[in-house]
Length: 262
Image 1 (spheres, one colour):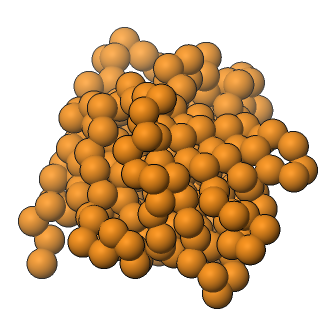
Image 2 (cartoon, rainbow, N blue to C red):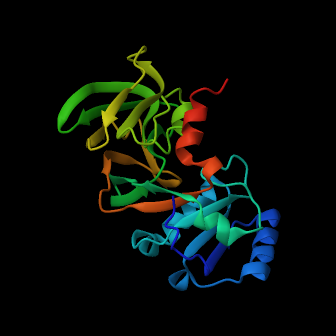
Image 3 (cartoon, rainbow, N blue to C red):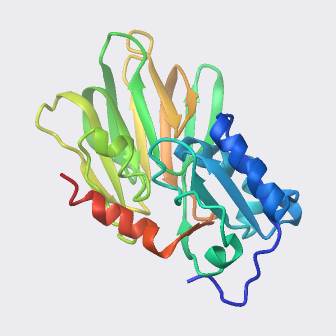
């Protein structure tokens, strides 16, 4: 439960560029006002899951300090969002359930240098050409697979296990399981390997074999880096983000429902 004593009076309202979302933002501002995020009690994000991820990135400094984010769906799937309703928003926020999310930190090396990005759903590697990717996989400094031949591979958080990971036939991971899902994407060899479940504290490294002939890109959610040679992924324990959900739309309940979906 959110702290009953916490007052949500100042909203920083953001929306994506869809007409419906912009119209909803206009209506909410007319009803509740709008503040700069640095002065707000909560960020209201209007859009889909992609826009939620953008909002988290753009306001990372404030969110790291404890500013919560409450999303309302004005996109398509909206797994990270609540239903849109402009009525009684302060009361909904006061009774909402907070979910603490810790992202993955990706460190990717390539010809262009070293890049660091955060991923709330997954870090994914995938081939850039018709050539299958050849990838060496290590966990906590120990080689676990000398060569995976596949379209790619991804490492998903519990919150992201219902996204790209599920589409790649990876397991849905309960929110409090302290587990990461390592899932191949269209594996060719080993043909029957379906991935692994790793402790959330594991450090996973991917080494690209013959990257000139078989170039590979890496992405942290929707942030892509091309022509990489080495990727290291570990949970960022220094970053904790708070997402707010209506009781009937708690993230843990959504993940559980996905495990029984037809």
